[in-house]
Amino acid sequence: MTKSMLAIAAVFVVGLVGWAGWTVLSPSPAYVSPAMINADGADIGGPFELTAHTGERWSSEKEIDRATLIYFGYTFCPDICPIDTQVMVDTVDLLDERGIDVQPVFVTIDPARDTAKELTYFAEAVHPKLVALTGTEAEVRAAADEYRVFYQRVDVEDSAAEYLMNHTGYVYFVLPETGVATIFRREFPAEQYADDIEKILAESGT
Image (tube, rainbow, N blue to C red; front, side, top):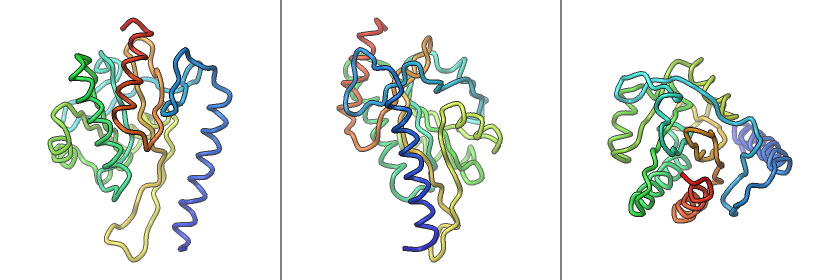
C-alpha cells in the first residue's frame, strides 16, 4: 500500500469515527431506516451561495424552495461520485413517478477543475433536473463547512490524474422550511431512498 493510500485510509477511518459518534448522540426521529443518519438536533446545514453550471449565482436560501437532495463530490472522481450521483438522480426519477418533486443538487469540492463549463457537460449528461454548483475555493469551503463535509486533496503517483479528492460521501435530504431532514448513507439503492423520503414527507405533512 502506498503512502497516499495509507493517508486516505487513515482520514476515512477518522471521519467514520466522528460520524459514528455524532449519530449515537443524535436524538431519534419518528421514522428511521438503515439508510438514514438522523439529523434531528444536529447543527448540519445552513445557507450558502455558489455559481450554477448555467453561470448564474445560486443561493440556497432562495433556490431550496422544495424538497432537495444535495451531494458533495467532484466530476474527476474515478469511482464513488458517479455512482452516488446516479443513485441520487434515480431517486428523483422514482419520486417523480409518485408525483413527488425533488430537486437534485451536486456541489463540487474540486472547484479548480470543476468550472461552470465542465459542470455544464456533467449536468447535461447526468440528468435534466440536476443543478451543479461551483465557486471560489472559499465559497466551496464555506458550503462544505455548513454541511460538515470533509474533503482534502491527495496527490497521487503513477496515475493519469494529478490528484484525487478524499471526502465524506453522503446525500443530504433538505426541506425548505426545516433544513436537513435526514442524511443518507452510501451503498443503498435508490428505491430505499425514495421510500424513506416519501415517509419523511408524509410525517412532516409536506
